[in-house]
Length: 303
Image (cartoon, rainbow, N blue to C red; front, top):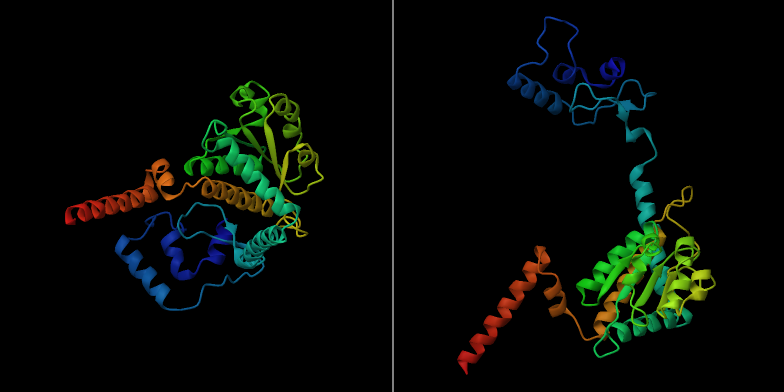
């Protein structure tokens, strides 16, 4: 470790961060001299320090004297270029999803029917006593939780149902004939979700499947299929199929469903402000309400 440290740290900085070989020497120079030495060393050259041993992929962290060497990203593939490619691939997946909806085919029909089902189940009137039960496993389960929070903040009753917990008693939270199931699975063949299908049918609950293929097992069992595919590009990293593009599309399409449902119900800013009183958003909403109230009061006084 000491070899890497003395090799890769500039001579001007070694006295500031590295132990001295002299046992009688002070473990660290005085604070004032340290700052002055560091300042002069930094200002002496405008170029970044380049290790003398270019074959070594390690650099010694300047903030601590005993830390292990860490990978110097300058020696690896450019992380920014790779990160930009990930973002561009996810953006492309979203653009393709929007393009499929614009074609007004089965994808557009599925989206409209899903909005209609949710509005009927959760809207005003006796038929609107239901909830949107969002379910999924793994990364899809995380997206499902976020969509549940979005539905709730926009005024649509909703809750997240863990497929595993559902099979161990939580199915009791699903109201027969009233609730709507929104199931997320990119493959459409997640075993935990498929095992729930007979129990949903027994409760006569409508099922919306958000997945990539209309021919998947989940989509075929559903009342409505909502397109959640990524196109022909797959996930953002070819070598590792970690959910990236698929979860981004699922989140965006789910958000679109929640917002479209809210608008169809005639709800909007006032409802969101009522359900979201905290944080910066809540504060801004309250300030807007106060301004509107004061404006109305002033108008009444003026008349």
